[in-house]
Image: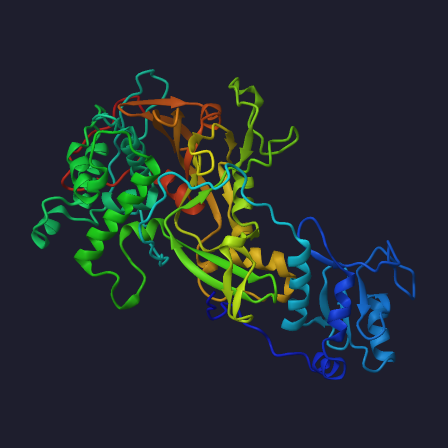
Length: 559
């Protein structure tokens, strides 16, 4: 394990706490461990064995916050804790029974001590039984990506205030017009995996704004590079075609050929994994734009459009179960892959449960996206074959690992691990569980600051850096689904525009209701920052058209 500089600051110690430790050492902390209990939610508290419901020793009150004096084990409410401190010299330091946090009666504030945290953490590790990820033994996920991830620098230009022109065409059912940007893509031979991801990219607000504002100029690109196959140029061609107003299906053949040049190992007309294609495509965009503009020199964060839109940062805390030493590392990511939470199912009274009136058979097994995120950030005990070297112990020890999100991207891709391979059974399978997912998602509980404070309480102080620079409120805008078996299946994409849902099934685009989307077997779920989602919806009927595109007039009676 290797440690990094802590991203939060530690205040100077309280003088009264320093005096207590000078007189008593760590004996008080050690003896307190036998009274520490860990609640099922992982929060520590103090519980004296001779009292099931402790109360204030002075007023017998038990319905307010209580404190335990570290010098004499006197239990009192906040008022009598302060009076006890004034009347008893050297009894300034107490412990909040409910939160297991240090409190100074003289300073009248909570105080921080890493030695006390270490005592709590050791108790936490010994008592907590983190659940491992359920599923096949020895699981290794099919199509595991190997592309290198870079970090995101916030600040993507999201200004939609440019010259506009209204374009729309009539719905075949004469119910309402489809928004501009919905156009079918022809299947070129088992290419539904490609079409489904392209539909997502075409409707991702930051990416759509980038290409429609001619941020990648094809003429300039051709002059600057002799490369005949440019993924960015071919993507720009697709954007031009889709937002031209033409509703006939488009064939992205040139793009497919360019992608084959980038990913030669996947160059075939066989069915591919949509998630693997998504990662490969982003890697190709980065490689092309980064090479052309030398965007990642001097160790700076990559500013290519792929990383500006999709890249985030994960935090990994690995804690030695012997001494409590924690090593923290950070890893850039382009998406978050989630295991299905097979230990939980939708309860009848769940407020997020899908509408029962959908008429679709959800199956006997179901899970929730919130449960998957909880599982992703839940502490996990590493196996005996995964012992890591502890810097403090100077030997390999059992460890506890917990992931959290240090920085969120503008567009959040959540990949559901439906395909598994068992090394024990030497077999693969697809998990056909129904997954309930919210349309509005708050990622705040999964940020590193929230996870660490939930684990340690107020003893961990506010994080510095860029965690708060991107909002944690997201709105769903696309869902890639997979139907069929593991060996053969079909990908389609549901796109959300103006709070209406549209099914993009290769060359066919149809309007669907919300229940149809919720009942689908989601494989990749895409969210965008709430502000960008509503901003894009406001401008959706007036999309900026470049000078290279033909002008179209509105269809009478359509909008």
